[in-house]
Length: 247
Image: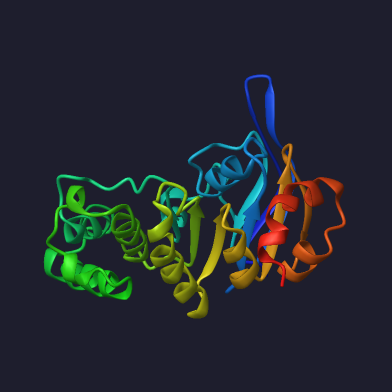
């Protein structure tokens, strides 16, 4: 059984239909990269997966349990899904360590000593333990994003969702965040990544999904999608990147 199964997912905002019957499966350990133009529905689909947006219809199954079912314990299921945002969403007046401890002490009601131990370990995994006592406001964009990843990992999620994790960063520090994500992929973390980083999509993904106008227009392995796209819209979208990533 897939870890995440999306079935006939639809979402509209007023008269604008943003998702038009999305179907997608993500297996344990998969790294699925979602690409597409602005307005294609990528971010809405990702936000629906952890119910930051409520779908109009369809199913989102986590290990076979439908998050959209009225009888589902949604908070319990959402704790199994980590989310990393484009703009970090850290508390700037708190330290990196405190940001990582917060979900443990407030959501899981964990005692402070245990929460601090886990937070230090997660910060160490993203090479940020030496900045544990630094205020978030004093960190660089890349450092903030690594803390945000550590905070999500503190909840021991089964799947990580990344929404444009490098788009708010200066080009010279994008690599430090991508390196953390590559390490997570090597360790077997299940990941769905919405990104414009085509090189990451090509090197790290098990599968690349191209969205266009609210539908999945094409999906396949990175090799299939980048070297021999079948859909004309996929070819048009990739045309500005392919010359830069082809041998």
